[in-house]
Image (cartoon, rainbow, N blue to C red; front, side, top):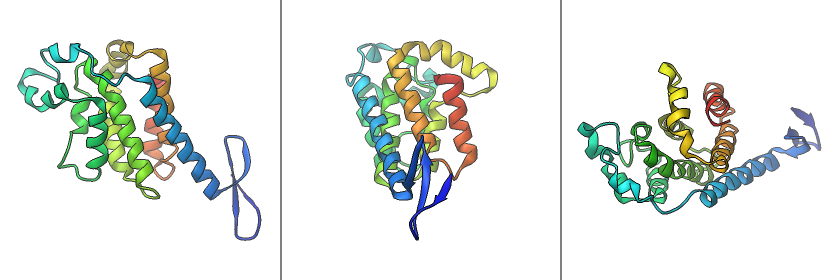
Length: 199
C-alpha cells in the first residue's frame, strides 16, 4: 500500500511497518534474504553423508548414471558455486531439471547448495537478478503436482528433513517469492509449493 510522504518520496507498508521508503523496503528484503541464506548455511551439514558414495544409482536410472556422477565427488557448496558462477548460461554447469531425479539422500544433502546459489544470484545481481534462471532451479527441485507428485515427495524426500531444516527451506522459498512481484504466476507457483509441500 502506497501513501504520500515528503515531496518526491513514496512510503510503503511492509509486514506491519508503516512509512518505509522504497529504498528501505528494498534493504529490508535484502536483509531477509541474507538471514534466510544464513539459516540454510547453519542448519544443514556441510560434509557429504558416507552413504552418498555407496548409493548404486544416484540419479534417475543406471542408463543416465554418468549425468549424475559429478555429485558423488562434490559438496553442496560446490553446487552453490556452480549455480552462481553459471547464472544465465544454461549450456554450462549443472542441469536444474535433472536435480529432482537425484536419490533422496543426495537430494537432501545437495538442496542447500541450490538454495544458497539462488540467494547469491539475487544478492549479487541487484537490482536485476536473473529470476528466470532461479525459477529453472526452483522448478528442478520442486515436485510435480501431477501423478501424486506432491504426495510422493512428502513420503519419500521430505521425511529426511528435520523440522528445523524444513522450516529453513520454507522460509527461504517465502523470501524468494517476495522477489517475484513482477511475475505473479511464478510467485503463485512458489507460494503453492511452500503451502502444499513445505508447510
